[in-house]
Image (cartoon, rainbow, N blue to C red; front, side, top):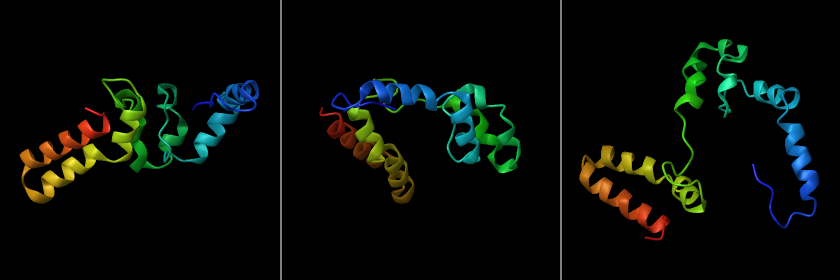
Length: 118
């Protein structure tokens, strides 16, 4: 979540986000997703919602293993671009489809260099 610097009501936006992320609002909304919106916080790993549908059980631990886009670097616009272009995913796909992992990794590395302006 972010508030743009040029927003007309920054104070109001901050207050809204404080209100939205209180358990009363956020948890009610989150539970409506039935696990299809992975929780960003560890405290929801034991929420009763996870036990309604057994196929969702593996996703309970996502916050334990999840990392921010750009890890181990900063989560910035370059990391967001690399993520949005599915570079890592496409690298795996190219390796599997072509059977040439070396060429796929070279392609992925070149794409990441472009995204990061290297």
